[in-house]
Length: 358
Figure 1: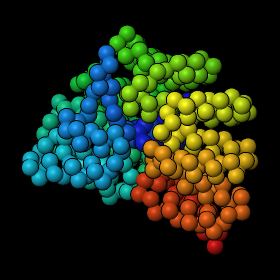
Figure 2 (figure 1 turned 90 degrees about the vertical axis):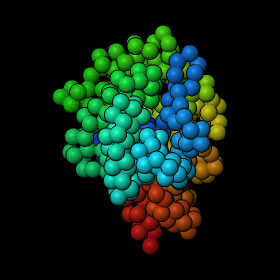
Figure 3 (figure 1 turned 180 degrees about the vertical axis):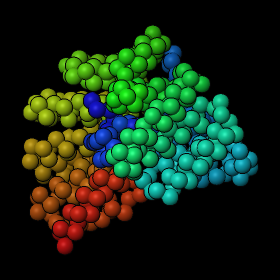
């Protein structure tokens, strides 16, 4: 499952948003790499680990709302310029898009957080979020060279707080994604899974699914994935959505289209308020040259949670062109191009296709 090719998650959370173009074809997002940690962290024994003690900040984070994160973070920093939660909130908010200048600002905020509070796990987690986005914006070679830094930041966050599932999950995904000379290792990923098997069984099951996929044991990966019970853990739910997308892409390549449809429909049943399943069904319909059906799925996805972290308008534009709706396609492509969260690879293609329409 080549790991979270989506961005809403390490947005490595990656992103799965169908492979984000760039470094080593790291997704949606490696974490969505989706390299975008859309983070809601889960503690064991049913307790919810909150990134922020501030409930409003936590709500904005779970909603992946950059405007609210920036505003609320700035309010906290106005009261205390070294406030950890304020710095993390602003860094996270600025890093949710793909604007290079905003990302530079996010990096400075994350580094300021670490300088003032080097033992705060969330400062390291925020730095990993920013570094993950840098991977997606850089050239392939430079992006790959940055992955060890992401790995180090996640490792330190996990060292400081072993209960941070999001850090554990994304670190495991990096171990599975990168080659050994950059620090990759199936064994290390398995060690991370085994460490939480008894106290965080559902999270461990998801990691086992990723490990099985990395070893091309796809049937086993599917069994483990479909047995995961997400509950109210938003971080786990994000990982599960990404994993379904990656698994589905594998079965599409194997021409097992009925299997893919059943898989995506199960995700739709399990997470009905999220856009991912409808988006995946739209992509499947495009693969089968059922573009009118794809339009229906994409338009539904646009009304659901998480839509702005997926390249829906890009793919909707393609489907509209295929059904002869070129005027509407122009509007949709333009809307995607104007989005502050458009992924670089999709953005380039959407611009090319819009230009071709004249």
